[in-house]
Image 1: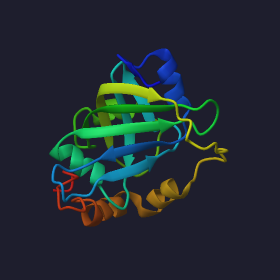
Image 2: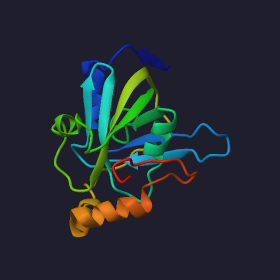
Image 3: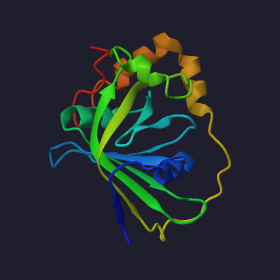
Image 4: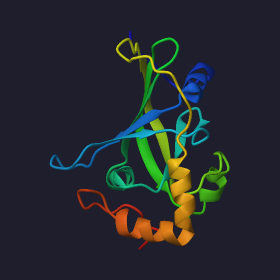
Length: 184
């Protein structure tokens, strides 16, 4: 039976901290727009900031859908699935915002996470609904470790290469919505 929570209590925080991967879903307002679901991982890139706020590091990548959708309408959902141990799914629905390196609070928030190259923003979500469900249909997987391709790629690109890549590939969403503001 699904349960809703008023806040991230200690048990929820432990569950979230134990997950090696989570999923982020956003969508534009237009019915013709593309719904986006992104898997996220890498240890030390997610933090529960307070009893209703959670955030994660957003890395330079092939698209910028989450950023564009948040700038347009703020709607976001995070989903955590137990792929190991007892079955459980936790969803966090809320309103998100994008904190870019140019923003005053970026450095203060950045200190909450491990150090990785290629961070283009921090996605912060204020939860409007926190719930769990059984997760009986989620398969069991064995965690083998972190992939190192993303940090190595970002290191090879360097700061100037990442800025150029973001300008060329992350300025807008698939649907033409603006995303990164730091490159304007």
